[in-house]
Length: 414
Image 1 (cartoon, rainbow, N blue to C red):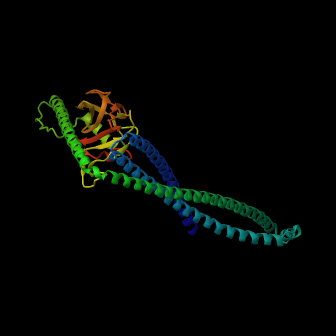
Image 2: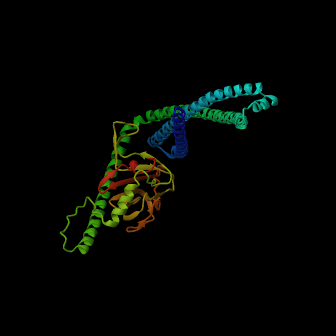
Image 3: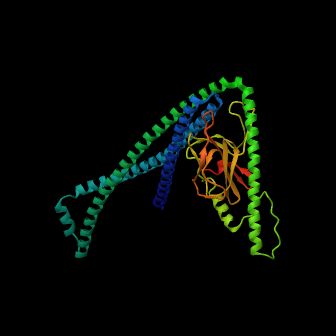
């Protein structure tokens, strides 16, 4: 029973180790992704530093770099913890093998001594000849054969367990080296993070004297943003009303004697076709691709403090993603273009309907799609505008009917 429980325990621990190895691979992949994001962010940061007159946008980039460094440190620490658990399990296996080898070697040594004492062919022959009858002689011959076979088997088992022990020791040494490397990486990243924070503090202190100018600029941009939000809200309501009129017409044709349903301009009544699209869209929540191939979130969703002046509150109905100059906006899911909006002479937007959800892609200099067109996931919608300060930023929003959602809960790894 004890052997069975021990066996069961090690089967379980082996399964845990396999799971940990799979998790380690995922963490290593995520770490590589974060490192690529840091490199891309650094490239953008250096580009903006050359062109940017105000330090505020540099601070936004620097903030993102700090967040990425913190993610990298957290991921590496998680890898180290999993590796430590794996090492502990391996050490337990090594201890068990050592105990088993001690017992095997002691038994084997006793057997060799016993075999040595009765090693002569004469003593073996006498052992057989002293049998009282043929049956007893046969049994004694079988016993001697089994004894020799058992001794050989014990020797092979000792060799097998010794090889297994050497394998575990080698693996443990590799894990120790990997853990040492991870700890060194984390120490290096923490020092780098402290340096980034010191640079950030210098930048913040250098622009505090421009508070009035920055405050006025923030208020102006917030007014512009709210005016655009109102325009997009109106277009969403128009799209809902159009969809509901179409649904009402189809329903009246299919059921002429049915009572007339009251429709509103704030909620889409889904047809069978649009319900499938809406369900598919919602099923991919948290897995949707970003609306750009590369970039980082330079302004998050909702009300948030200004990066330099925490008392100043900034409102955002979506997320702003800074990307490389010349980048295209792309659809995060399949759907139908319900509007191509000219927000200003230099700012266009595309609105796509996915059942009862809408995604909007703002700050495009040119548009590649037209109203009524069906688009596929990751299809290019237009070129993102680069402003006079050298910034290439797309504003992306998601709403269910007229209620704005945080895109971070919809997009992959945001």
